[in-house]
Image (spheres, helix red, strand yellow):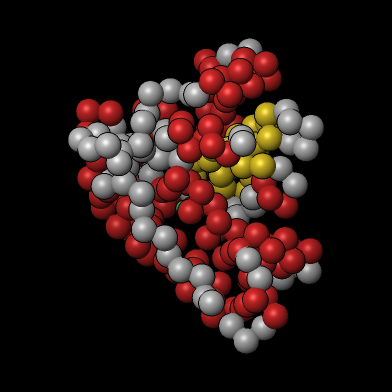
Length: 206
Ligand code: MN
């Protein structure tokens, strides 16, 4: 069963000023779609085609199969990123819209324990996202002993290959923000905090 491009879990016109519908048209409809197509083309007819996406990521990474790994990891990273996003509160007009009310009880406790609070976590995450040179992703992840960590990962790298549980991510490839922010990556990063689906983040902990 080939991998497929997931639908976006929100109305793409409701995430301004973070991301315009035009950005989603390219970022989801062209970039993410291309990763899925290239992944399917690369694994078609091979034993990898029988595996789950996480298994393909781990196997291709272990085998140094960059062509498969990059596209599989980017498919995972982008699918995860979309789930981390929610419409602006004032645009949430029906019960199906995800809440953006702030971190839930479990994640709040861990952010307090491991970063000293939400504000300190945001500052550290912003720093990681801003200073990542070139293309990549800023992540909040949980390590094997339960501690939260901020990861600054290049290109297609993903917490899965470090055996860590992803909780939240922000794509800082230029294709994620150039239409809306041009070269102003820090403005894109600052706006992110108003469009996080904290309910999704909380669910990753259980
Ligand atoms: Mn991207």
